[in-house]
Image (cartoon, rainbow, N blue to C red; front, top):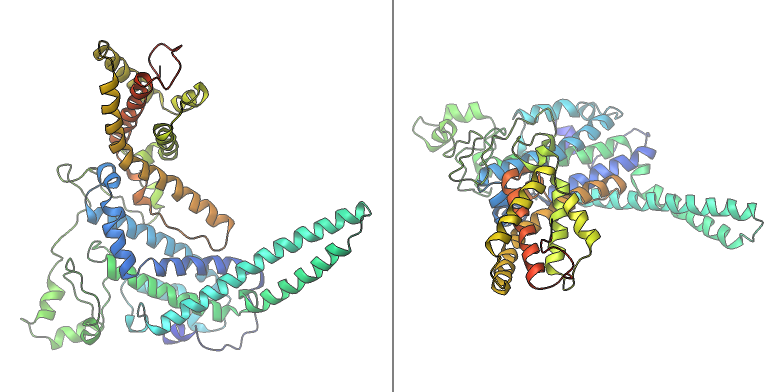
Length: 459
């Protein structure tokens, strides 16, 4: 195990280099670096004070912090799992026996069988490893772009030769680009050995997993508990929610500790907040049990009463963004845009919208409408204020995953808990109907549309 951790800085006899596998390794390194950076004290504090407590997430998803943090934890573990898969595959090509057994070492770590004294989050040595990985990932990304540029130039040269154009300038560009490719091959992962590359990534995998268990452990009791010496535990950040101990050689310390000592009590005492996975409707916007996602992706494990389970998350997100644009627009929207929004609604929601609109018109037939329009503007300002950010985050979550497939250094900024995937379907649809009814009233009474329609904006 010590060899596995030290491999990041050691020298190896293996001459086998990554070459074309460098791009997959670079993407994995970028993923690990992003995960590492997202687990700092500041980032975790921002997660708890920002997305977890945002009005839209609280109303549509849950107000239970433990539930939301469990979702965040599962998503980060899923991201880490993708990296582990790549590192495990690359480790099979290593020379060092400890590196070859990376998969077994990680499996043991997930069971809590690991000495975390060598994987200190935020330590100087780990910081150097992160810097090396960033350097290699950036250089490999530059190599990828240089190869793409060289391919385009060579294709242009062939076309110019076919058309018998002067290609001297293009040839000079090709020569320069080939030098760039050779340079980036030397400084990137292309020329690095499997042992060095796997050693770097393996170390950060262990650091990231231990860190996830450390900061999410008080909220996710199913995570393994890592044990470190009491002397080092004193230097760790203390979370008031935690009521467990972090010690290496648990049995040894248990024997030495007195029966009434604080250590023994800490090891025997259960967390103060035992979490069963069920949320109460009285204290939570969404009552569901988070399914066991060990064998399937988090996005596929949404409860039946959520927007994600209905497959409408991205459609509703686009609809909400369009409605937001209409609300803030100073001009009227055309019939095509209105019909496009209406057609995005499922049949059941179309019917609900029609019923709501008919009731609104019959109730307000004798009113001039100006006061009503102002009331709807104020109401929509509030609703869209908390609904639109969740819709934007839903689209951003998808865009970041798509961009990650196209680039080596795609960075994620949005978690699934911030999106509509885990939003209560009934509440989300009720909010959408309210927004569309409000827009219809505003457009009707403020004369933003021409008077040739029958007075009902969405019918």
